[in-house]
Amino acid sequence: MTTGICAGRVAVVTGAGRGLGRAHALAFAAEGARVVVNDLGVGLDGTGRADRPAQRVAAEIRALGGQAVAHDGDIATADGAASLITTALDAFGRLDTLVGNAGFLRDRMLVNLDEDDWDAVVRVHLKGHFLPLKYAAAHWRAEARAGRMPEARVIHTSSGAGLLGSVGQGNYAAAKAGIVGLTLVASAELARYGVQVNAIAPAARTRMTERTFAGTMAAPEGDAFDAMAPENVSPLVVWLGSAACAGVTGRVFEAEAGRITVMEGWRPGPTADKGARWTPAEAGETTLKLLAAAETPQPVYGAR
Image (tube, rainbow, N blue to C red; front, side, top):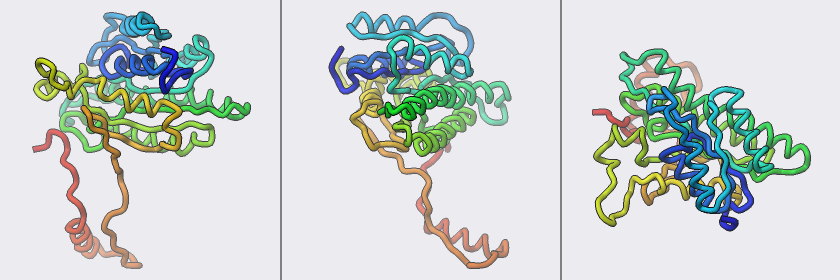
């Protein structure tokens, strides 16, 4: 595995013990990257540590002829995130690509959503993206200031829930929307240090989706194309993590089956300017006219 579009690069993938993260880690290795496989090994709801999936995936990569090391620290803590970056530098001497993927679910309707379930989900998804980014960015800034300008890449994992909302997933949707905002800020702030930052909103079969959307996510019988296989998302992630995507930053992509979509976010629509302060009645009348001229928003997932 010494050739490929990521040959010579070092990629860190969080939540890489199963599902999408595992698929990404294997795909990076297949394209020549040396990989740090991070996974805490918790259950679907973020509790327990029953096994060591990071070690298994790292061993799987090595068995295929690649280079990989495992990291099972909690990347939603400062110490865990810092050690993640240190692991890459100690093992391979460099860091080129960071993929944020770790997460779990605690779905509830808002009126039944406990504060602990809110905090836990926002912590792992949003803080778990921020802290590894912070320590990776500090390394890349130091490299740039030392005259070694990186070709660094960051790929964050948002969700359709973060872009459109999802009934019963207020905590998850809020965290995933926050990841998009973080991505846009990081893209703007880190460009001077040779860092490109993008996000994906994938749809694939994982522990988090195969229960909720069992029918949609089920693997087909026979040789039919497995549209929901997590491996379908990884080629885009690997390309975004390579030097080949030069100039692509601050973007959000949906990736599902054989489809890639550039998502276009908030931008001004119909507008009116009185040039003076509105009365409430005028504001209401004008707003209704603007809404009539605006595009109908996409529905929230699960809305009836």
